[in-house]
Length: 405
Image (cartoon, rainbow, N blue to C red; front, side, top):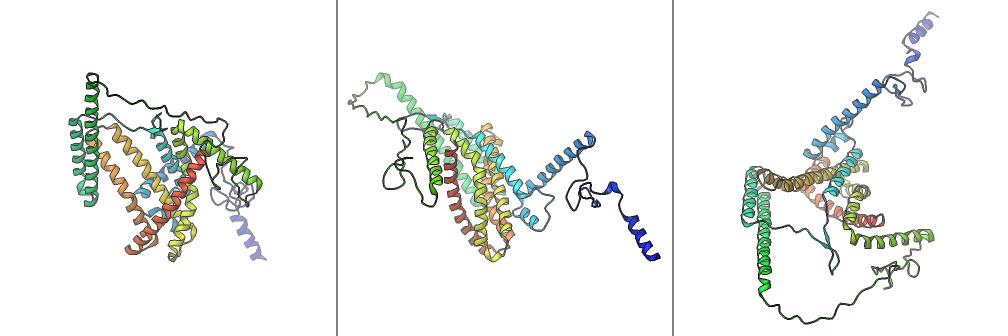
């Protein structure tokens, strides 16, 4: 009897006070959250200074995780995926959140700096990226500065990369010299034109005026089958397995694409912005397919599908971060028209492009523990498969952007 009482006394002594129980399920609390129902110990019914302190603690904790994640993502191929597989996850940003964070910022930056100049003409839209050629002295000075900057970075570059970058620089300035010479000849011909009698020009009949019916639902003369133009009523696109509602929706989307394609001819910048805004969503569709491709090609590595999906998320996050860096370096090179830092930006642009395939190969080799021969072979197969997926993704992005323009 005494033993029972002693046992009951011990339980009562160790039992937590009512204030230390979860208010929701009355389970004893052992931390900041209830381990049964998950309700946090702290609620919003408390002084405002405590809520603000928790808010700033959460913000700064996210910043610290982001600062740990981004350098590891860009400079350590495969490191984040291996850390995630090893269970060390809380110190880094989660793969899906990291992907959304970087891709949205990257494509937003691309849409901000991308511009399209449109000039009307007989052949429709003309994309004009031409700039006023510099003087020969300026071209020579810019070339020498670019080559000098390249020479300063030569000790840190492979010989093949150095030769390729040097050839690109020389070809770029050669094109500038040709453009400058052509501009000089055109200016001289313009000045001499009034003194010369214009040659007789044979009269040509005016081209036939092409009129389009504003009510025509298919001014592009789009055809799918039977050699006839698509029409939403007289010759619609039909699939028996879609049913009447599905076919009606499909033909409605085709009509939107046709109409918006006409509108994009007048405002191509709007289409470019829409393409870049839809790109993260399209890539999110490509991601699980890419993970499935990894699962098929690397089947002997015996990895779970979710592991391949984590690798796909980290790989695409790296590509988005590289794109963001390319935009930043390109804009820096544009703002710094000449000088040492202009050359540094040019070298950085080349190095970022070279780092992308090298990074992906090293990451694949480390994550899947392959030898160099098998890593290169499977890397080539994955590259071909991903190229096909990306081509379908681009087509899907164009159609989606046109349908929602």
